[in-house]
Length: 130
Image (tube, rainbow, N blue to C red; front, side):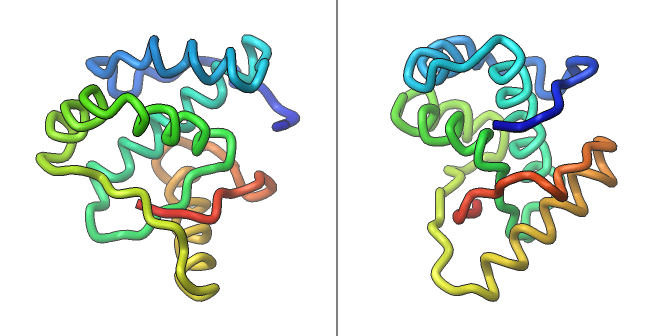
């Protein structure tokens, strides 16, 4: 579990209602309110980065990936949310090779820092990308 907790909730993608997703992730993984706030915030950051960096492979932090997995299982909601955010479905790709995996993690670390001031360099990253 991440050691630090968000000091403030950033208003990222406020139009996106993740209530049902967050409730299911908290229930499934027995997360604390602080872990839940951080995971949702990182997932919102991940989605926001995909809006502004459409041609860049980005790996989410492992905690945020729990939100992505749960969001995908809510198929109608995920499809509608992707259409609204990206104009297309955001596919969940399991990294096929180490080069792609490392590039996706490096891109994420750099973009979370440059776009949000969020240092995820010592965070466990998921082995997938969008």
